[in-house]
Image 1: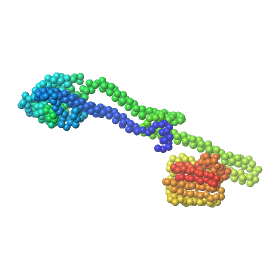
Image 2: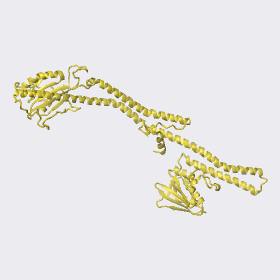
Image 3: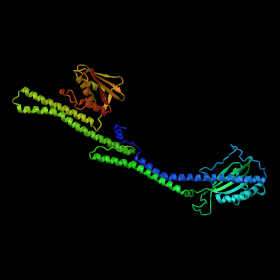
Image 4: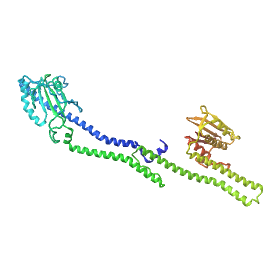
Length: 534
């Protein structure tokens, strides 16, 4: 993240969120997800109703089985104090052996029972038949309440008690009965085919399309003595929802509120920052300061980038305006001095030309020439600085050999001793605009020679990561504490009488920062060192 983006984010206190397209995709996904979830939940609920029906049939099977077993014991004439073992042989607990449903939430749906040869029991006089006849009235009365089909089978799988019309029929070929005769509880779900019209939603009769069949084995001292086979149509989900319609209405109302809340949230996520950005743009157009976005929340990515760009644009325009105002004021001030001198000398020459001798005329002409030269140098430096700080097109760069350029800069001061040193590992060339390198380093060497006295000036070149550090050191008296704070200001100079413009160090820093580097200095009584990282 750029410095401008960090400042903009700090200004309005919002984080960069997902893109608008992603937000719209999330909204559409949520809208599409609601019916999908409804279908899934309805399917799960249907499985739950199947599970609930199986649990009910297991409970009924246990009660019917115990009634038939007690009647069987009475028919066999068992002693009253005898308690046979009724647990399955593989029961882990000697006291409790609960039976859990086995169909699950998504049972396999088998086809209805196909027509098959009917086999009936030959013997209908044993204790199992007597016990079956004893509990038949109870089964008929219970069916009026639970509407479940109940059949009690003997150890051969033949019906000895029933709420239907299969008395005496052997059902040992059915998979659930065969499993129960083998000592395992089993349940199956079969498709229900009814030739009757669906009952109304408020009817006790069920409208479901799935009928459950359970078969629970009955044990006596580890042997299977019979099977309780129960059947019941599972409740239809629509019918179950009708039964619980009051609760469903509240649930639908809650879903509606949730949908509205989510829609309003995502709409505000987009429209609220758009409105704020629009108001900020209008304020800028009226000349007002930038209005920050409301703090908090997460901005969509596009709006975050738009607001950041708006902040950067506003700041750049404000900085540009401040720069132009400051540049104009300082340039006018700096140009005013030589202009005043030139105009004064010209007026004196015009008014007293005949009264002056040749020496006086030459002195005034020299003053005019010096003022014009200073103005030319000042304007040239101002144009250089303006081009560097406000350049819109990239500077043509090339691989510039460092040593020849530095030696050429040192040769501009034959009266001084400029020592150039290259550290080990320093690249021989630097990719940069040649004029920029000459201007940046030349200003540092010129200042060092001007303030270093008779001592030599040392120019040290060393690698600084992917960049190059050029240090220019003199042995002058150093920079005063008051001047250190202003050393890089435009037009600040302590050598104005010697033709200094106060723009050299400003140009050097502008070149360095324009290339991602910088220029720093260390000063003291024994001298000053400027380090240019470029």
